[in-house]
Figure: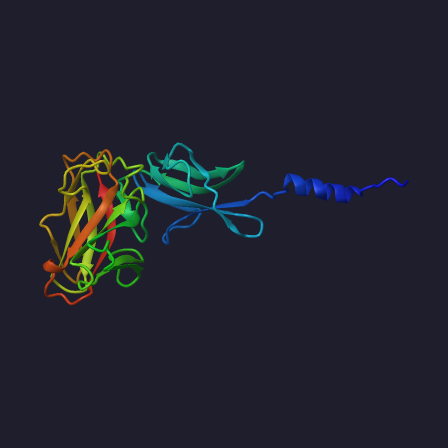
Length: 288
């Protein structure tokens, strides 16, 4: 009887198949913004930058695998420490990097932090840096609202945010822009030390009226927002030209804030404005 022999290359293939041969995934990091390089950013102290990680396999397929984040150089902090994205907060001058790593594979973005006056903690500056456009409100949960990033005549930079309200669809509507991406408030932001919130706004028609607030506004503090304030007078009157508005926060408990910014627009406040009532916001930021 002949012995049955298996060639070595066949045996190797079988072992590889049974154990599972995998190639290392290619890992890259980029910043979610249209105004800075994907791999290099420069910030002032107290400013923030959102970073996202893109993990691809050898075939270029994007994988849904969250990395762990860290900072080199002692120039700031990141939060959350694990996930598809993180927010870097600059705390000290110098050069360093924001690093994403998983299973021994790392990628980084170079960060330079300079001294001098801070331009504030940026919520929107050509992109939503620290929050999600998720908290739609109204009798039909904000179904009357159409929102877009547009490049036509922003206050600063390359884009602004356009909101169009269909009065026939809802008597009122609004959006709460959440830090955590949910009404639940997991991972609220500590904004203690900030004394005011500023933003630019204009409308397609003069005398458009919109109410703006941060945190819980004038409502009682809750599990998701320990404090907040309204823009006064309320509602604000917008014109067809950009105006800067300021919400003052002195004396507010900002230790846990999920609603970084919010607005409400109502049919009753805009009886003479043709539908859709359209307005624009830009340059949203907190200041010390």
